Image (cartoon, rainbow, N blue to C red; front, side, top):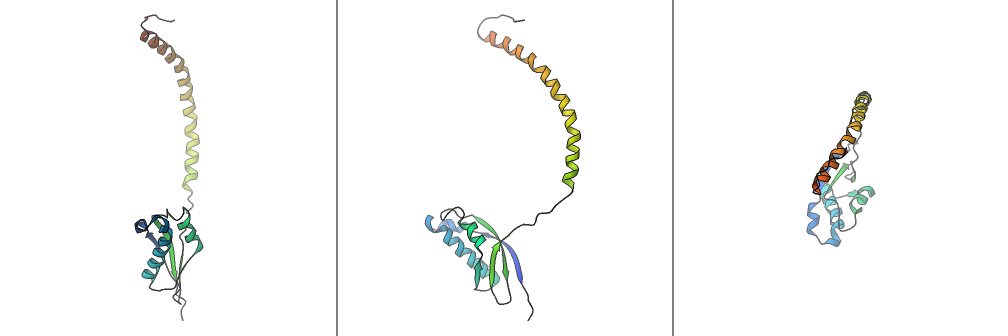
Amino acid sequence: MSEEVLERIYTINLGKVLLSPNNQRAKRAINMIREFASRHMKSENVKIEEDVNHLVWERGIRHPPRKIRVKITKDDDGNIIVSEYQEEKKVEEKPKEKKEEKKVEEKPKEKKEEKKVEEKPKEKKEEKKISSSKSGKKQKKE
């Protein structure tokens, strides 16, 4: 006998769960996952891992998720195991180069900020002139 393990990743749509009453939705979601796995893997012996169960029941019985991403495996004996899908993170070296470029760009920005600080007091004087004209008095403050 060859040890052949069939492993697939599925996104299961649980939208029809909303058709059931509020207090039975998470139960129906678990049943839908079980039916989906047996239909696609062509076996009746389905085991749902505890992680998947916690994922469905996380927000309570009334608000299960609309979609769930799972990894379904089938062994030689016809047993189906439904487990949570975890993406592999890829490490890239490109972000390190970007950090070095940012350091070079920060120095010119500081000079621009100093110029802006000098211009701000002038704007306040102009605002005072405008506010005095609104009150009906036309006086210039120097």
